[in-house]
Image (tube, rainbow, N blue to C red):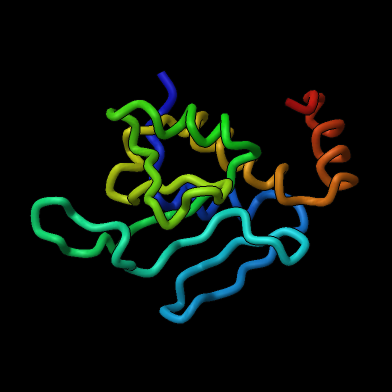
Length: 139
């Protein structure tokens, strides 16, 4: 069985992709980019992602881009999935996941989601090159 994912894996997988730079947001929250386009970022607490019982803003939300609306729905429609979205992200090709729930994912699943995020934000040439180097086909 593959090991469970950790928050540190998000950083390691994202930074291991080619041509990645890391910017830092207003609270030193990392924003992983390829070609100046974000594909994974650690979000600061916002009013749209809160604990339903306490109303406290989640301080551990990670935003991950997805290739399409159907990919987004596939990740968020299962109520047991750690992936979710909020009305703030309606129409935005990304999903949210709390760092505190990242262990519900296997490392392989997390890696695939982050690689897909990179692929959908990288230039077409960079994406084709990466896919060819890894002997994968575009999805």
